[in-house]
Length: 133
Picture (cartoon, rainbow, N blue to C red):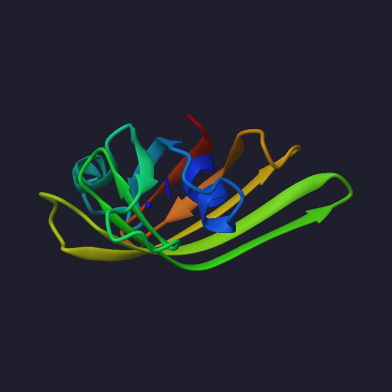
């Protein structure tokens, strides 16, 4: 959702059981006439992801009460730049909707460095930064 480096790296299978810090900024509503307050309720300023209690590699949990299922993950390197695109199904705690399908597109100069990019879940969009905690 934050959709950030932690989710992206974890989704790519390189971080394993490590916690990931996902930060969001410049959040706004995809639909200009709608209030962006819902985006703050969904994502806040960010969260930390960790392995989900069910132990599945493609499931993460956040310290904000989110349940995150990594549906698709792609990482490639082009001329020293890592490019990541991930698709998530996020279940929110105490938000306007139960779940949302989110997409994250980010880049980094090192697979272990912070990824930065953009995200959208169809209602909210903004910038995301992802890094190991």
